[in-house]
Each structure stands twice: as C-alpha cells, then as structure tokens.
Length: 315
Image (cartoon, rainbow, N blue to C red; front, side, top):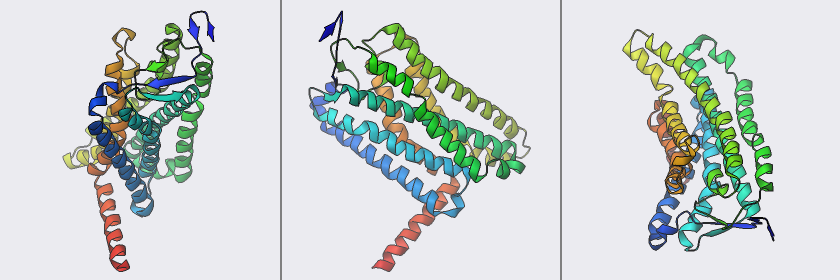
C-alpha cells in the first residue's frame, strides 16, 4: 500500500553490524561477555548496598537505582544486537517492536540523566551544606526524588512516541544501526520535523540537566577550593569524583550523538558512539564507583567475606 512517495512499513531490518558478519564470533563473544559483566557488576552493587548497612545513605540509594537502570538499559538493546552478529541479512523487528524499543531506550536514557542530576544535587548538599544534609536529604526525600526521576523519564516520551508511530516511512526499511535509535529510525521521514523532534528531546532533557549538574559542580568546587588543608580537599573531592567521571562519559557521548550539526551526522560513527553509551558505559559504571570509592570497596569485601564464610559453613 502506497500513498504519494511514501510506503507503509510494517517491519524494519537492523543491519548495524553487517560488515562484521565474516568475523561474527569474536564480536558476539565480546559483547556477550560485556553483557554478563554488566549484569554481574551492577547486581553486585545492588546486593552490596542492600546488605551492608554502612551503605544505607542517600548517595548509595541513588547508585542502586542507577545500577538497576543499567541492567534494564542493556537488556533492552543487547539481545537484538547479539542476533545481529549472527544474521548476515540483518535482524527483522516489527514496526511496533521498533517503536517500543525506542520508547524504552529513550525513557531509560531520560531516567538516567535525571538520576545523575539528582545525584549531583545530593553531592552538592553533602559538601556545601553538611550540617543540614541529613535533614534535607532524608529517606522520604530520597524516595520522592528517585520516583520523580523514574516517572519523569517514562512519562516524557509518550507524546513524541505517538507522533512517531503515526509517521509514514519511505523505503527501504533497513536501519543501519543495531537498535532502534532516534536518528537512524527517522532518517527517511520528513527531515525538518525529525530534527525538531530530536532536538526538542535533547535540549529539554540533556542540556537542562547538564546545566543543573554543572551548577552543582561549580558550587562544589568553590567549597572544595576554599578548604585550607590538602587532606580535607582530597576527602571532599573523593566524595563526588566517581559521579564526575560517569557524568563526563555519559554526557560527552550524548552531546556528540544528538547535539551536533546535521551535516556532520554519520551512521557509522554514531553506531560506534551508541555502542559505547549503551554497552560499554553501563559496564564501566559499577567499576568506576567501586574502584574509586573506599566505602564501596570495603563493603564489597565484607559481603564477599560473609558469602565465603556461609559457603564454608554449608560444607
């Protein structure tokens, strides 16, 4: 069925890694190991936070939410990606399935941005207002902020998704990407409208959140630099350095992907960028927070020691 120069598309073919098909086993195993590492690392962070009472603080409550989100985030994308490595002609996904994956991906990305913003606000209160931190960031406030992040992320996209669902896409129905992302999916629809939609999402979520985080960091750095002792500055900086690294990695890839001129857009380059923030970054997050955080390392050590002790008793 055709209308004008457009055709009704009922399914898409994801062909992001067709060039790697002759060597599919190596990237397949590598991504599979990355996925298992992501699941194991983030699950370990969640379990450690739940079990160790020393980590029952706002910062680690939000970190647990971030780890849970990263597990879900990768599980939405990697299974189809793994199929793509083994399918020479690409992976077929229905139009509804593609829009659903796009909605979940967009909602999870928005939720992660909001969680990172909340975590920056938490570090701002802890460093810049330590005497009132416990009262300002109590359990009820933590739950409310986390809930708003999740609800905000998943309630932001329905209008955009409804608009995308009604679009007519021209042929061919091939997407040169490994999942249904905004730019590759909308590449053959009306360019101006697509650009407005994508930039609306990017500006309203990415830029605003980034500016709020940046404002928090400016206040934090001002307080840290005003500390007279080097030991005090080092201790204060260590409390948010992990968050700073995660934010830098996430926003750098987001800005390069969605907030650069249309003329510089390249599907091949964006496939590599998307591979980083959708596969590599969720794996790195628990490593960054555990390796650079003394409290997390000690808690992990206590949890693992307790587990080994219980296993020995079982024998």
